[in-house]
Picture (cartoon, rainbow, N blue to C red):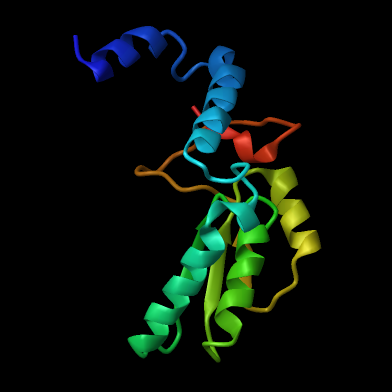
Length: 147
């Protein structure tokens, strides 16, 4: 039995079930910290600011006139706001399209962000059309997920 088969055997009773949500949230946070990505959702410690600067520089070198950046699972808009800060000095015209499926979090985003370069939408993304249940973690909205 290979590693993937063993993992599937161990975790399959919990996959796609609300029962395993708390466990998988904690496992995800543990894995993120184990990969040295800051606190998981702390953009200043995660390396994402470097990546945003790198992308802006590369797009500028390629003479891209109006980049469009997607922020999928935008939460309260921190990443979108940092994207605006990193792209403002390099581009006259650009857009950040932010997508947040959780209604309460979406409303926080709309209330707290007013940068004209950001458009925020209240729906999620998938590889197929349809609807799904979003399991919310009220203590830590970043850990909310579709199962």
